[in-house]
Length: 452
Image 1 (spheres, helix red, strand yellow):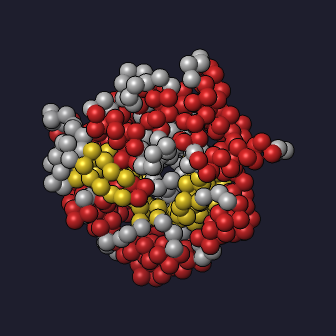
Image 2: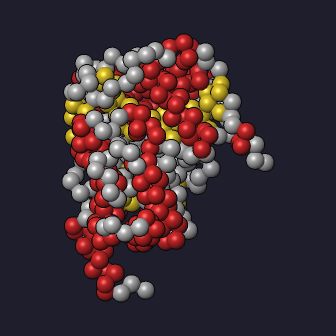
Image 3: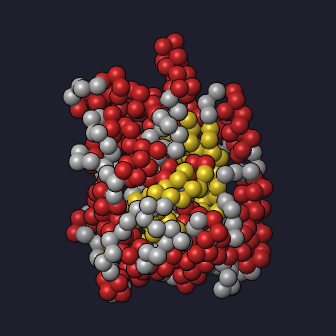
């Protein structure tokens, strides 16, 4: 039972500590839309999405108004498009992205994810067609997000796909150069991608999911930061317990909203993802949580340990609160979307190598990082390979969302606005990885993948 103190505390978290529902995401299976005729397939895709998600935005707004809980984004995720488009007799997959974009515009959502391919062990013809179409697809759409899974603990790392994705990232930046390479902010390269992730740009509706489902992403870095201010100087077990209790309360709120949205939309409730997803707003930063633990600046020695504690405590608190915790659920470290990370990067304390170390213990990976526009495609592929190796060996999801912004050099800043924020251009190692990437083939799965 909730008492008056709990209710007042939750109101304070919403009003003063940036607690919100970051997203209600409806996942929709498009497998029934497969058709040999690409025009008919696109028509089916548009019709099914607009029919299923017709009331998504209004329902979110109604819940927001009635419960007084901010719901920042309403989104849609769909079956990886390579699986759907593969049934059509066509070489051009861009019309499928355009159909997704039209449907998203009609429904009024913020983003639609699922222009995706799963190629951890090999690429089908459909996968390769979709991947090669990504730069044009993201340049010609506004709301479509794309992801490619290039590795897994079970399969190893598909280095041919890794090499291709380095070129695709570069081509996407070039195709959207008039917007500072913004297309790259809507493109994620995964290892161990999950099927129920409600967060963009990596969301897609997995083939193991129901016909349609409601997933909710909750976020509250400001709430955790505020809670830790009450335990200054106390031992780390006290810090962990404080974070667990806070994550518990945040998750309960998320489950309430998810169940209500599920009921009103007559759609099964999937999961609550309690990832701490920051925003550029002051007081809504994961970096500031780490600094509250005693670090002078995020990125200094001790940062990885602090982040490991945070990520683990968030997951433990969430699991106590709900049996439906899923998605990624942990702490995100997107540089451009976190004012504390931006400050640390500008100060030189937070560098690419330190961010890579941090991804060993947090959710996702190298996220929203701007690098010089002249960074070679092979270097980007090598960065992707490093992150995929971390995910593969540690049985966790890792990803790369990197922005090689045309015309920008180290020390410049790119401005994307909104939740995407701004990012200082960070240096990469100048030494070449070209011969390494040129080998191709597959990095085998680790020994501990043989668990059957």
